[in-house]
Length: 185
Image 1 (tube, rainbow, N blue to C red):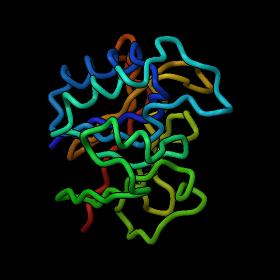
Image 2: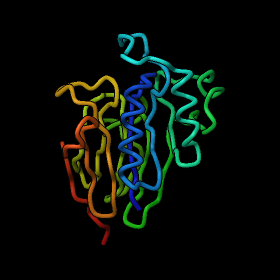
Image 3: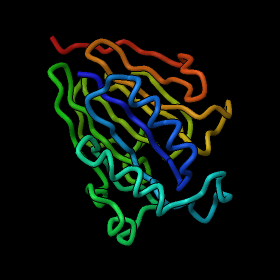
């Protein structure tokens, strides 16, 4: 199974449409959204293509494929517009080779991890900085941001397959980071 991971959409319809084009091209089974979907937040400038209500309508067409968690900029009002749940701060997905712990990153993150076993993965957003690495036998994976990327300034998304995790650029699908999946013995 292939999973598509995105985070920090921050209300940008144009950035989300570009991300959804990559989702459709990827052949992934599910779209995992790691929070901060509709609102830009008080510390961020209003992004290009800011249209939260239209973004909600667009995401709703994928509701049966979305697994989402709540970010620090998401609210109860946002849930009223969305046809898939976003109110939980964390979720878990079991894959044959590992458990994925999904969170936005403002409650749990690389430096404040939930209880995880060796070989599990922590998927988070929040920092807008892409990461794909193992630390203490835990896969730390951040797809970066579709809308307000930091560091290299490239909007990105993630893919997880049974053998590899990748961070790819939205604009040209260039591979930015990759990491093999360690299988449990």
